[in-house]
Length: 309
Length: 257
Image (cartoon, rainbow over all chains, first blue to last red; front, side, top):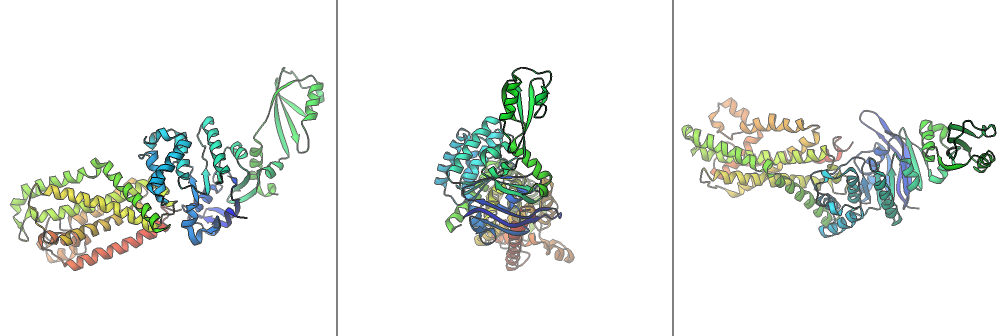
């Protein structure tokens, strides 16, 4: 199997002796949509920095599509497009200049650069802004500009470091669709995000880093199967003054018109509904109390040793 | 990267650099013209006739080569230090660093940008000087080569400064406290033969003295020091600064953590 990214015992100790990565072994398959999650300061950005040569590794090996960064980093870098967390373009240049210059750094001739610039700026809804000063664009436009810039050399591996931070819901969802299409077309994507709903919605596989160590590297489905308990919130049609005694063992009243029920792994919601129907309580809507991945994430990063399989 | 791709990357950075300094021409091209105009008016026209001759030439003719080269030094240094530090500070330098463009190409392109501004400013100042004197050229090859080599050297100096700089204050320290005194004491305004033996020897420790003298030789055919030694010194400095710059591009904590 070809791995888009394979790290072996990847370690990084910064000059101030902070051990940012402690022997990370990470595999991302070609064509994958991979979530790399972790709390702030866990080491995600250090991994991305090493892949893009902005951080020098202390030890370990990195291969990008089978090319070792120790043997041919220039070739390995040509496979990667990166969308960093912070805006890192010249705010005095226009989107068209920024993207065409980026193409130039990858050795792409001017004519091809202009054709691709139009393609990606159109796709990301920025074509009308191509000659505006980049510093004057809105936050969402700047994020999309960085995505267009990362795609200009049509990389096989796209790395997105919190690409939807500070972006409104509508634009976020349109970016999700765009990224899903890019992934469907064959581009491997590695995504870091603090929106766990985003990771659950987009990604097939997941790695969780905590304190510089990889505490989980599995498929999203396998990870969600680890969930032992889910809490659902039920909105009631008619308010209740107190919970019928028959329901005390399975539900609790949050307020007059809201119930919470806990469902353990292997249990179904049917018995809850049966009990509610028997008590003539009608449910108008239901939702998870918290994002499922969020619950697992909190568990894994709180006490990784106990939580690891 | 194949050679054509490297050439495209090189030209991209060079064009970007030239576009940058021509876009802000009010900050980059006009000030040296005005300041040298004032030098010519005050030192050349007003004070110069009272000074009389310097090494057998009118003071204005003696002054012109030094002022041109001083402008070249300042412009090439400022171009690279401000552009590279600005890109580092705003993080847009990452656009280049994450790409497969080799460090050698990055460095050469930034040098080229610095040389382009240095030479352009040199031409502007030369044009201004024509308002005050008729320039004669003793050796055009020496003039051209000294201008280019000096611009390369100070572009490299600006690059090293930019890599180490953490704040905008750091960018102005070297030009203010090192470059300016060395240039003023490097024989722009006087011949070191006016100094006593001790201060002549001290002056010879100033590398800018050799550049200014070599350049003045190209115009007037006179020099206080050996031309060949001047070339040797400039080229040696270039090689050392070039090696340091390349090393910093790969290993500096200011660029790659």
